[in-house]
Length: 138
Ligand code: CMP
Image (tube, rainbow, N blue to C red; front, top):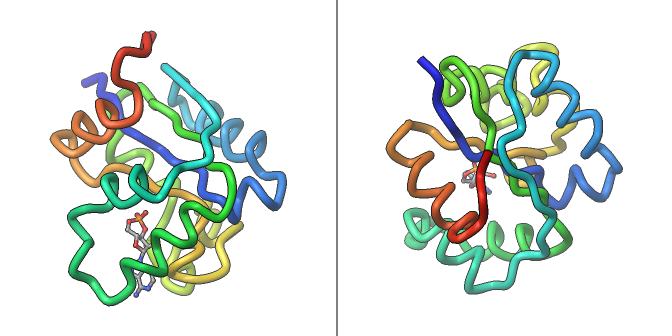
């Protein structure tokens, strides 16, 4: 079943010049790039995106990090895209991530973990609409 999901290449990964490697990995695993843009998130944008985590103790740190440099916002499309992207990313904490996952390869810590991916089809639709409202998605 073809699905869409939102991926974010986070500021640690853009700083390390890893955009091309990460995008190439998605494509090599059969996911297609339906839309893509680079963006330096404002605090309100990052706070809104992560509103579900607003009561967590790490929320301030998360918003500081996500606004510390540019991100790349990507709509991925393909068979089982939500789950496939999560498998490619690996566990949230790179210490727990399986070998050859993006977080195992590229992330430094649970906070600076290289990529974000939607955790369900329902949240994917919400997250895609949040960043790509009014923008054509192919
Ligand atoms: P992400 O998939 O983008 O969704 C929420 C983010 O919160 C998560 O990735 C982590 O980067 C971050 N996060 C989760 N737990 C912690 C934590 N204990 N300390 C700092 N950041 C965290």
